[in-house]
Image (cartoon, rainbow over all chains, first blue to last red; front, side, top):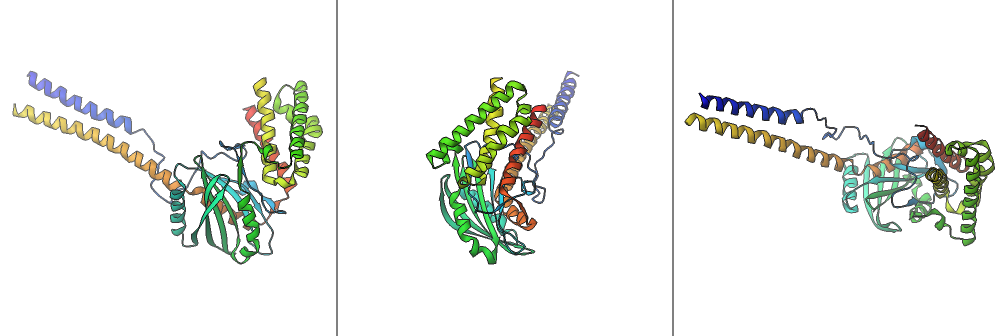
Length: 283
Length: 85
């Protein structure tokens, strides 16, 4: 009889253990998918509005002169900025900068990009070789993609720095590519990264002018916050906007054209961010 | 005695198979995560290429002076919105 009891208790123990191990696993919902066709949803990518500065600095480039800013709302999630040129054809030339968090070396990243392109019957890919940039050694690649307007030829400069892939893409209609090549080459050469945007201004006189402008703006903002306690409201106040921010913005746009529009946007955002954060911290 | 041995053997097999299936599922999860991560890698290059075509097809842009001002304003609005939250 005691043997039977032991047997029953052992059997019960077995069922309990089995049940416990299942119950801990069942409720866990997995978001992982093996299916390649599943939508590539990305939640962790910060939007352009949020990402003021990359962890290792500001990465920017000079677009060709006279090109326009593309509509920000139409950009893919990882694309920071895009400029478009002019053409009589339907497919306009464009340049854009995208970033992606990665933890693999450049060679492996390129293998993945190559494999992706090869799996698409509408695109062709080739490696154009090494390309040195201020971010480190990168790789220049070329894609040709069939579209309803003709074949789009794109050159892509890919560099990986501090676990971030920087992808600068310049492209146009294949027939027009040679016409834009010099512009594209200048764009690729202009890709750079900096910890401090103001140090990138080559002329010392202009650097001093820029620092003075920022100091004056900070002074005006301090005065505005003396009147209005909430920093955001002080920033948005009509008097600060009209008397300080808008003239500052115009000065940056008109007096620092040689730095390019992307640098100007980053600087304006950085200055704005610094103003709001510094005062919040001191409050 | 023979019965007891049989039961114990069965129990050991049952326990081992349960734990190994749990480990198996964990390994499968890890493999799935790694595969998923690897599959997502390269999206930046794809996005760059896609944007080069899509924005070119839309066929219009904003003048730089206006565009810069708009982008600076977007940051102000988003900062204000965050502050109110």
